[in-house]
Image (cartoon, rainbow, N blue to C red; front, side, top):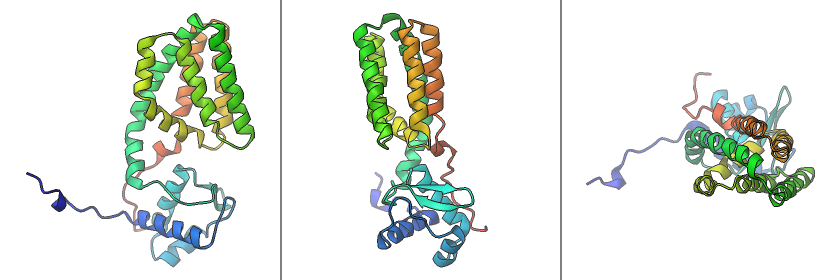
Length: 239
């Protein structure tokens, strides 16, 4: 019988401690979106750590869409907080994301193909409504998350395949994670909206091959996220 209380202890990565200090700093100084963090070199000196540790902490904040680093111009808050998701949860999402995206490409490409063959006028109206909602949200400064969800749900419904729809439902939570991850990439909401329009046009035209191609291109764009470029391993303290 394993004694859970005596399981091996894990040592917090140094950059996780830096993350907590940065969050506290932002709170104490009441930083909001648009405010700039001190330069990495200054942060490293004040915290007594390497610049590598600071850089890794900043990357984690970037991955979560909390800050953006401008080339030659510093690091700025994107939101009014630096409350980051726990690193362990981030690591787990990074681990499963490739499988989710692989499943999405397989299922949604086929569903788009079927939608082009089987869609009804009601199905098309639902897709158009979804895109109008996504466009309005983006224009108001949002990421278009609900409109994106609505559009993909409408394409799934238009495929009129009970079993494929059930498969999509079984991974709905994971798909939502991949959607949120993608839409917080800089410039991604507008690009996704444009790709949705191409998918709809192919479905409207009754072209299964074009619809499948457009959906495959879209899902592969969704797969290009900062999270998958991030290495959550230990930072090199020698730099």
